[in-house]
Amino acid sequence: MSDSSEQRDPSVADPAADHMADPVANPAPTTDTGGVTLTVPAGAARFVTWSPPGHFYSPVPDLVEITDDAERLFVARESLEGIDLRVAVQLENFRELARLAREAPIPASPTATTRYGTDNLNYGVGDASMLQSMLRRLRPRRYLEVGSGWSTALALDTSLNFLDGSMSVTAIEPYPELLMNCLRSGDPVEVLARRVQEVPLARFCELEANDVLFIDSSHVLKTASDVHYLFTSVLPVLATGVYVHVHDMFWPFEYLRHWIEEGRAWNECYLVHAFLLYNDTYQIELFNHYLGQCHREIIETELPAMLENTGGALWLKRAR
Image (cartoon, rainbow, N blue to C red; front, side, top):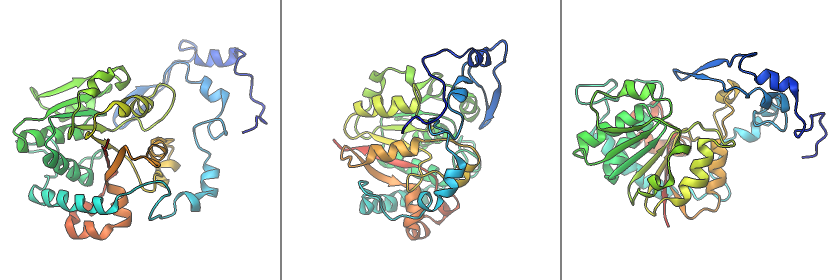
């Protein structure tokens, strides 16, 4: 795009921006996101002064453009060019996973032997049913989770109650407050309270066929982000046969309109769309929201409880 704006030269220092970023002159504000209070980093203000939200140089979208393009963005689709949905495989997988889910309904609240309950605001019945069933089906030796909380509790419940505790559970979570509230004292979970970018690639190379890498990230691709590290460094080194779960994926790789309008400038969906284009290395095994949008009848038939919230899980498998 041609530079027709009156933006300052990025190579020239801007004292005003530096003053705005000064943590003493302007204490860093805080924000409450999902029950976790985060501090806005010092220096963040310069990214707003360089290109304000909605500007064509900013990753934050322009709501006027979104309104203008709504018919293109939020239209129902059966398919997308370059994306192999493997519909027959998805439907077969869903039937088997739904059968397992019917055998072991997940309670609404934690019990004496379970930590997870579907009655929570973060990880609902659709995603939970498929996760529990997928783990029961795959029987992985290792479950490595990036972004943890209620899903960790469910994974541990599944390991202890269905897999004889044979599945190791590792949670990589830099903000572990919710996670620790979901677990119980002495639970066999390895918690790495750090950014995934600080976890060596060798740890991911330990995953073998049928092991699971569960990703519930910041959902934001930017310089040095978790999403950047996961998709450009981690996924390329995984072994053949490893399953990858990506959370908050919506069909047709577009975020819910009301999420965008309330201010979520997430972009992981678009990266995953691009990642899967003409990709025969990673194949789709199950896409919850796609099934809910395009094959709702199979959910109505096989697992009607999931209609309450089909969820946003995308399950991939490294095929070669």
